[in-house]
Length: 475
Ligand code: COA
Image (cartoon, rainbow, N blue to C red; front, side, top):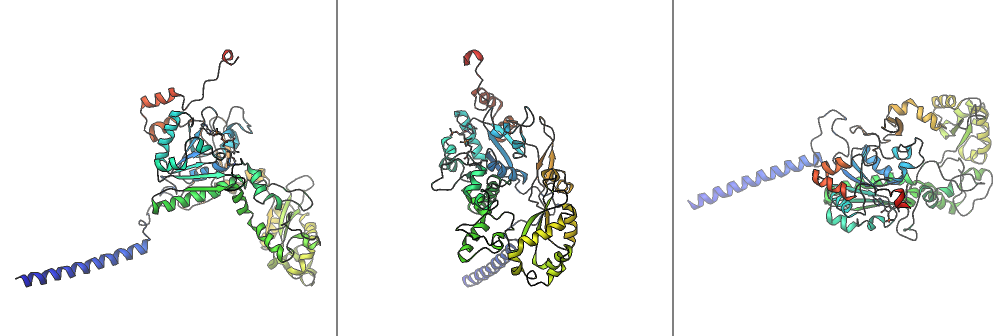
């Protein structure tokens, strides 16, 4: 009897082992196929929610660098709660104002798709509200001057203790080092990041660029850092700090100039027009005017109407594979076989003369005519578009890159929509919020305060601007 029992037990054990093995095999196979992800959604494209749905951001940013980052995350679907100082708000609301009494375009074009709550972060009750927000948000983004967040009591230790999942993302002017305590604006970063020394003409001073590579560029870097930290949090369950220094961001965008700095040790930079002009190189990467940064020489050339239109120009690239087409186009067929012009190395010392000849041709056409003729022949050219032309360009409107939104106090305005297009996540481009427009809504619906508590908060002065002294008091 005992023997039979023992045999049956062994049999069932073996069967269980076999089944378990099968299950493990099946699950592993399934997991390998799905990479641990849910089944692919069967919803129509663009109707399966937005990329950052469910991510809540405590947006403590101001001016440009931080707001660029959070606006992008808001476009991607994150719930972005912008905390502003009562009565004042982000300083840009009132800077470069074009419509009296309305938020400036400086502010509105950097704070779309966000909600605004006013909180005095130095008020005891304000601190309490902020702590509650910290517990409920996924990411805190800030770009205050170094030390300002700590002075509010929002140290990393405090935040991490309240919410270990919180990601704290900061823009600062400089990383750790001699300048870490400095306040920094756009052009300071362009200068310190190597952009200004390498921009402009050789015989002129360093130049800053119109693109806001220090502010908006660093905001973009920060957004990538935040999304990466959110992804890592899925595995680790904990938040981390993300820091982007504006100097680093600019340098990252100017890396080809650090490339050239190192190439200088091995001889002149032959693609710079100063090489062809016989001007010796110094110790550092020089300003290259409108030379192209890559291996295909290019320059900005006049087009028809340049005498009266400051933007009647085209960028023309003498790409090697289309050299013969260029020669035919500009009426220099002999250059196709002339040993002085037939090969890229032969052309390098003669670039100025070559571009002069091409310009004689481009000056007979409008920039759009040049564009049409050259593109048919695969010759890379780029019209110098004015901001007016860009604002009116229908294709940019059609793709949502330029968007018109309505605003209750300033009326309709143009903004730059999401330049990053996701095929299954529709960009959420809404107007910027008025100062404190969502204070009540956030206190009640996000933070769960009761009517009585909201009334107490209002009375405490934590969310309202201090009363202005009367004339008599002020005197
Ligand atoms: N309630 C109460 N106080 C608030 C507040 C709120 N909701 N929001 C901000 N403040 C306070 C801060 O606590 C700080 O006070 P403190 O200096 O007493 O601690 C004060 O406002 C000013 O902040 P700060 O960041 O120093 O502003 P600023 O106008 O003097 O400097 C910058 C502006 C941009 C130069 C500076 O913030 C900076 O260098 N930021 C980092 C780099 C950066 O992003 N630069 C690009 C900007 S586009």
